[in-house]
Every structure is written in structure tokens, then in C-alpha cells.
Image: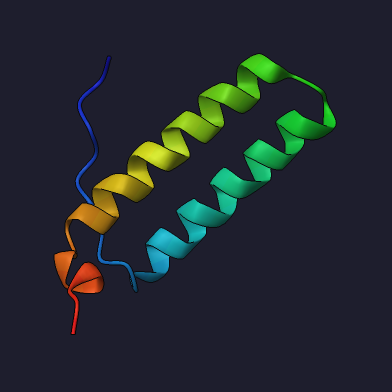
Length: 63
């Protein structure tokens, strides 16, 4: 498995483009009824999102 990518700041315009592309790939796989591609794209999207959110613990601070 490849190493996790470095998280971009959540407000980075480049990140928005990546997220949009990921969503389009996921939707395309669903429309094609391709479970293998859908799983791969969704897994990557969740992994990248988790990495990005982990870099911002202040989003989960209570109070």
C-alpha cells in the first residue's frame, strides 16, 4: 500500500478540486455499477479526508 498523502489545509482551493474529482469518480462508478472502482475511489477519499481532518484537531475541540 502506498504512503498516505500529506494533508492540505482544508480551505486550500486545490483540495476542493481534488474532493470534487473524487466525488465525480465515486458517482461515475455508482452509475456504471462498478463496485470494485467504487470501493477503491471511496476508500481513497475517506483515507485522504481522515488525514486532512487529523491535521486539524481544533475542529473537534469541545467548548
